[in-house]
Amino acid sequence: MNKFKSIILWGILLWLLPLTACEETFTEINTDPNDPVDVPLNLILPSAQANTAFSVLGADLSWYASLWVQHTSGIWNQMFSADRLEIQDDLVNNTWNGALYAGSMMDLKIMIDKATEGSLPGYLGVAKILMAYNLAITTDAWGRVPYSQAFQLTENLKPAYDNQQDLYNTIQTLLSDGVTHLQESGAALPGSEDLIYGGSNSAWIKAARALQARYHLRLTKRDEAGSAQRALDAISAGAFESSADDMLYATYSAGNPWWQFSNGRKQHAISTTLVDILSGLNDPRLPIYGRPIGGEVLGAPNAVADQDQSFEQYSWPYDLAAESTPLEMMTFIEQKFIEAEANFRLGNPEAANAAYETAVLASLAKNGVAQEDIDTYIAQTEVFPGQNGMTLERIITQKYISQYLQQSIEAYNDWRRTNIPALSNPLGDIPRRFPYPVSEKDTNGENVPSATINAGVWWDDGTED
Image 1 (cartoon, rainbow, N blue to C red):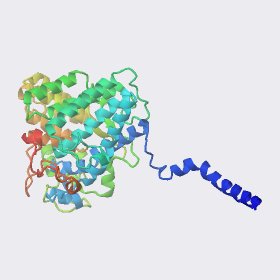
Image 2: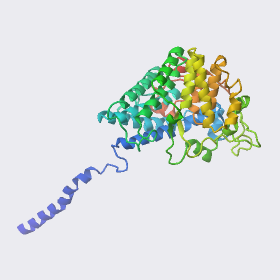
Image 3: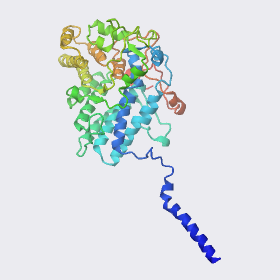
Image 4: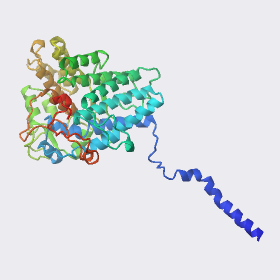
């Protein structure tokens, strides 16, 4: 009997042994190896950059802004409806939820926290610059948005909405702090994971200062002289020196998003508004921007165009977006137009004219215009009027032309800020902001502002709706 009990006891012990040995494995049964809870910074950075460029800058916001600023007209499906001001609250749900708050901005918040904790000033500087970029796009599109209480996950599912005036202070602080961090010793970034500047601190610093100039000048309706001077100060501190410094993104797994849109959905045509502006100036970029039909570029009238996905009536608008065409996040051309406008507002016509001419020439060269055609174009007084003939309308009109196709979000911001060019929609008022997502109204309705799409954001109309 005792022998039998010993056999049973040893059997139990042998059965328990593998359980003890595998205890560590069993405690990890709820851990998904394909969804790690802690991701290193060298993986977060390229993900945040790709999402910022492709999903935030290059997708829905850009496609709809292009319609409202009348670079293009909607001739099919969603763009056809949006051009007719049939705008639903779910218009850009995916951008708000997936691309911004659960995408690039969440990645960047994690980067900022991890880089702060690990004393890694290079990562911290780039993360803050990119956070400023994303936050600016977000508040420019919607006005008041969550930031100070955002990114807390289950700890705060109903974040408050911050005033845009406060957010613009935050944007400038993030950019200034980013520069400071990148100037610290030991701030180097490994090159391969930085998909924008390859780990060049000096390039990121230039980009931050160029962005500071952009966001300072955004506030011309609130403080004309002050915003202009601050923009010039940012440029003087060491921003872009040529187009070689441009902040571009071109690392695609499936191609430029405008190129993808042209292959899959084909819902835009070049707008009659833009065609008329280019034709009125004898602009050699016209057949580059819109593909001629029978030797003529045919624009589609906004809001009343026919459906024409086969492009028999209206000109194809997508030729500037090839599969590998970089997305333009911030450019030397834009910076020179900022410099021209800021100097003009401050009463410096000579400096304004010099910056304006540099910007126009750089845009023509970028678009591959032949030198003979450039010479003919700039010989027109309407194009190069000299410092005595310089006007704000000329500066913004040429900037508007240069922003086609890839910088439609900035063109939309400039139009709301300056009302140049003069735009109208025969079916009603052009939206002055994007609608708040229906998902936010469902889950955080008590905090979502009541502003409609026809109400200006703070830097536009001076109110915090």
